[in-house]
Length: 185
Image 1 (cartoon, one colour):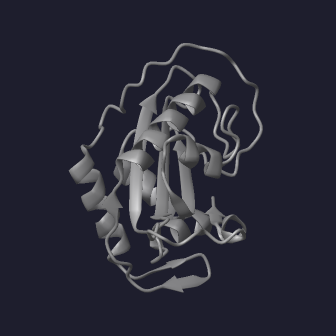
Image 2 (cartoon, rainbow, N blue to C red):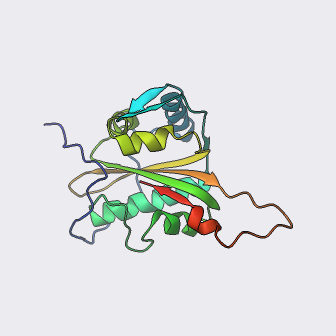
């Protein structure tokens, strides 16, 4: 029987401590293949729920976003849950900060129970909020991770999208800059 598809709208669960190795999914794709698939998805105009999106430009791989995604995928597998609220780094902003990513804008897509990236992209394309994140033209960088865990879902996917904060030498950051940061789930 096919595993139940779980969208990231799930937010409550019981925390169960367990040991999880940072292993990839059985059909894990390499960085270049993942980037190719994500950019192919963005290159096609599409409807996400009721909103129409023109094709979006390509995104680039970020090691910092990948590190953040990997750490959070491990946490989700350890907790055997799917939630945008973490235990140690509660928010996406916290997770990106912890990985050293200089964020102006960030987004996060989660999935669990699916073993391949094509399955995950198909799931996300059917969810307006996830599809919106994938098609948002403002995103410039991505990091993706999949971790195999012993829990009920088996596989935990995390995609972090970002727009880096560009620091201009000699200019101070405006005090209200953080309040303008957009976080999308």
